[in-house]
Length: 244
Image 1 (cartoon, rainbow, N blue to C red):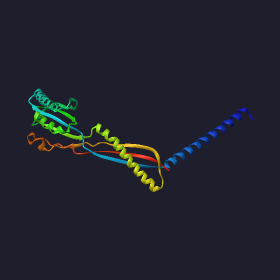
Image 2: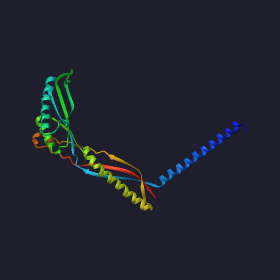
Image 3: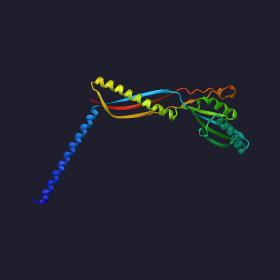
Image 4: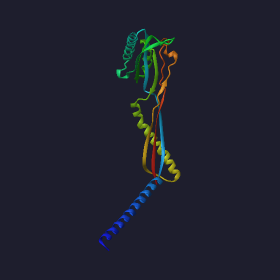
């Protein structure tokens, strides 16, 4: 047998050995994977907590009409400056008062040929504050200063409060999952021996919107009543446990 023929058979033999080794390793891997799946149970845990929102967001605006665009813009600017001054006097920092909309546009009379009969100027600011005890004053003093558009009031839980609640909710959700898993394991006659995987699902905090009743918009009706109510913060986890 020539040297080339011997080399050829050696290569064939090595190839067969490598194929068999790969097949054996794959079988071991599959068996281990199936064993891991067979010796685990998965469980969901859930926790929620009622909280009083600590943040309010609302829109405050001024809308005026004038015979000229400049007149409308100037009148609007004067009134909005007075409104912002009142807001700052109540203790709101500038970063909590953000301009959200400014416009000056013609008002048409469409009786026949469209004709400009006046100009409207609008300016709105969005106020975000944690001073919920001053919400009534914010609304009442803004309207007294000239604001005639109040709306979009919503309540939410601030990021700081959510961070404080997060650890408590995670611990409670994990405890809920563990309790359920131990109960199931006991029914099956097995024991929890460890944790394979875990994940967290954070449910967003819903905003609570407040619609002002018509009488609340009348500054003569007294202080505007505003109540933040309660919101729900929740957390869910999924844990896969080893059992033996």
